[in-house]
Length: 288
Ligand SMILES: [Zn+2]
Image 1 (cartoon, rainbow, N blue to C red):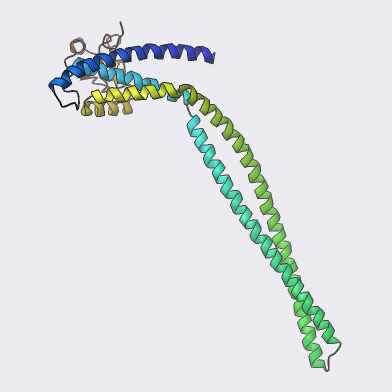
Image 2 (cartoon, rainbow, N blue to C red):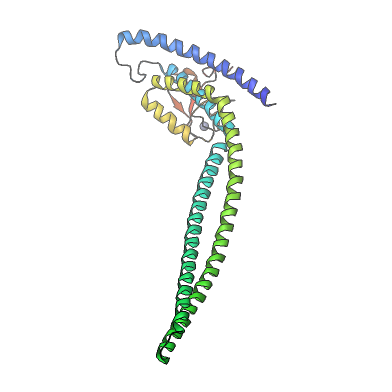
């Protein structure tokens, strides 16, 4: 199925390319002659309206082909971008959690040192208790021991809290890692899909872009700007349309007979009163 569409597409492009080649070689011929007479190559002030319209339509056809390729890629580039952002976000999140985890582990270590220190003090006080000379010394040592005992209890409580916290952080890290792995798999498959489509259409698109660029140089900048503006605002990307059944090929509003005649004469650039698209007769578009 996919292969069949590809095949039809290929023949279509070939046909188009042929018309394009013919178009450019004719232009080149006329350009050569003109360049001998006039040095100024900018714009198309020497081209007839008919030639200008023809070039515009040619440009339009090529840009439409590029649009078709883009449609084929669809939402994939955006989806890949979103997934890449999400993967990067998850990596940052995991790194931050890992830093938190280290901090907590370090805090637990500090509390453990405190316990060791306090226990060492308690043991020393215990030894000193054997040698007390009076009640005052005894009381003082007992108080110190009691204080260090409380310090140990406090440190143990802290360790318990920190341990609970580190467990939560470890869970978050694990959850994020699982999510990251899933997203990476999604990303890989979407990227493969996109790469495949891009590879299939890249050469075609490059050729179209190159030819579109060549034609653009033959179109007067003001007309080109207008063309691009119309194309941008037109929903289907068509800035140049031909008459179809007495109507504008873009918005399908009827065109009065006199106006149709003017269009067929190819002496003026005529735009649709309803949608603003540039109108040409079907013959100029190679139709009929
Ligand atoms: Zn229209």
